[in-house]
Image (cartoon, rainbow, N blue to C red; front, side, top):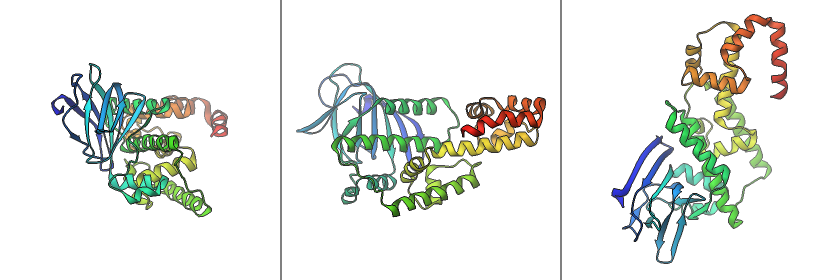
Length: 306
């Protein structure tokens, strides 16, 4: 089976690794034993295979399911139809993963070496869309923003785990008053760090260390408390700084983009257009042609909707 596997690295950091895995094994009998090298969530994208963990435990893997693998898990694989399969696997660093899972299921502490308690869960539509958005980003954009990839991976993990626990009615979140205060304090501290370092290329692990949190916990709490993700907050800070620079002068747009942490002029322009419905060049022309009073009128509707 190993010779039939092709693994393509899409992204790797100390916290998260993302791979496309293509298997071209013929249909027929089960493979020899394989072993997972890391705690991972696997998203079948096409094809179908049977994962056999023991004589009594096997499951069907196809694109409407998500699979959970604990590190060193032994299994065998068989393909009931020709064509093999194509999957995307996200590997997670153990300490951060266990800390995240503990927040939804304290029983994880009893077996941290086997943090995933379920073999599979349903892959609903929004999960599939998020996965394919992440793949397209990793396949087409260079350089890639590590914070975006790590936070999106954390979001995929959260949704997968939520689905698995919700199916069994065992998911628990603490909402006591001290916990809510702690979450608000965590969000406030994170806002400060982002406001200070928004020009830097930040990773989720770096942000978590700065606010004394764990990465996946921080991503989940920040989004729940603010309604926005960490990388969206970072992008908005950069774009507000861009407005300030453009209003105060006529900077070179490529240099401005790079100074604010965008990967390119094109990346900056697209983000600006999505936020303000005009490009930086158009905004600058409006500043020159309309004058301050007209610009105040232009920007009032945007302020009212934020």
